[in-house]
Image 1 (spheres, helix red, strand yellow):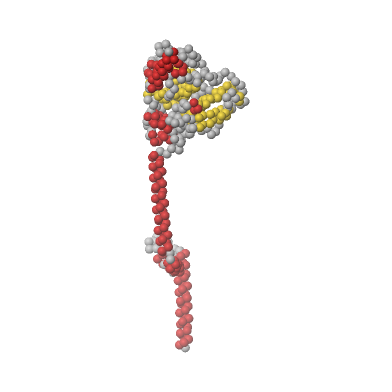
Image 2 (tube, rainbow, N blue to C red):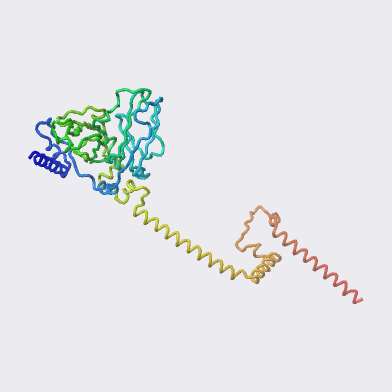
Length: 422
């Protein structure tokens, strides 16, 4: 009899949880899940949840089977580093991390040092150098992220290490056994709504396990979100998209609480960040959440070395044009070669050489004195003061020499004739 009751209770719990998971993760449904015994939730007036942007839903399909593996190779857990400059080596498998040069986004790592806002890491090939760390204990948390800063939530996507500079202290030293909340987004400046809220959970029990036996030590959990003073609860681990932020500065606080509304004591389980909302900023993320960029173009942030359809078409056209031009050039070369072979026969070459020699030996008067050449004389300059050109002088000298030779021959001929007559 007891076994039947236990089975029925299990089925009831499973059915109840399945119903919750099947519901849309809206603020209203999350608030309705809380019983009257829990702390009252302030009314949410400005902040509201909306569906994930369509482009992000489409891009997310590229990561449906992706399960990254992230490791911190150094420093090791509880390692004592005798320097305030620490080198951190990371390893990533199962995910290409990169940043598209044009769009400025891509799959990456969220790198957290203690309770500071994360640093986006787009390459793990070189160590990360942390300079001037304060003496004492420090904790590094790293997890893989999609291009729009949504965390991968498989267990191997997260890595954590706690080390000590010179010596250990109590600060920045989370318990390895207690649930741990890592605040991820929102962070920085946004140019458009909706704005994604996302976080990472470690050691958080399943609701089914936490609710199975009210007498055990397993505490059920919620995430209390407070935005500009308005609070609501989340009981599912997934990103949500929100609107209703103020222009300018806003503040967001995330707290990991138990079923009684108490913050579970562990480092980083209560974190607050200030963010900026500037609608004039139109970066890639703003265009992505407002569908103001084409899916074909924005795929470049999800797929490494992606060539869009338009880019492929342009490249194909350029290759076709280049090939056609190359063929035309070859045809022209062949035609010119054939013409040259036909025209430059030995007879033609000899004839052209003879003509060139003849032109040199007997220069044309017309060539030396173009018809269209006119020499304007100043009235004050006498004709004899104009000096002949060098070409004309040479021609005149040649003509005078020829005349002198002819005259000499004629004189000799006359002398011969006179002698004959005598």
